[in-house]
Image (cartoon, rainbow, N blue to C red; front, side):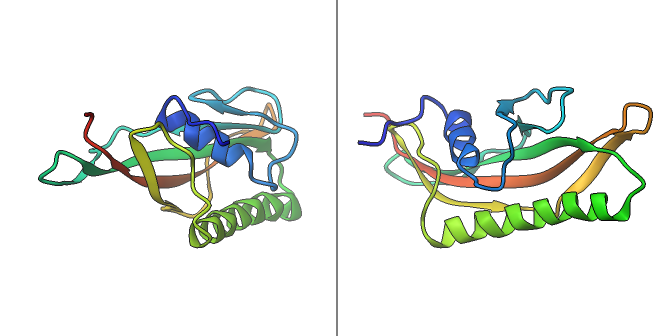
Length: 148
């Protein structure tokens, strides 16, 4: 039996943690550690309601950023490797979506699709620490049933 998530963000974290592309780092929430390689899922403030139904249920969206701390280098090969990771991550998410392998959510919610909204990109780089933050913006759409 698959256990349900306690929250939307937990369901997304558990889902992304299952991605075989992730290396040794653990996926955190709203916190990107200083160690390499580390990962985080950061919530994005946005309008959540997409559509409301007469019975009180609704289609909602949860936008988030998946980010990692990576080595910062002038090496073209190293930078292409990180860019390639985000391209593969986007492909993995698309494939999982097509297979209907979606995040497991709290009991009154059902995932409908998950997708990337952008390519992976560098948000900031610290040449002195030789680290950079890469990220990709994503969105989960889900049905939230009316509480009985």
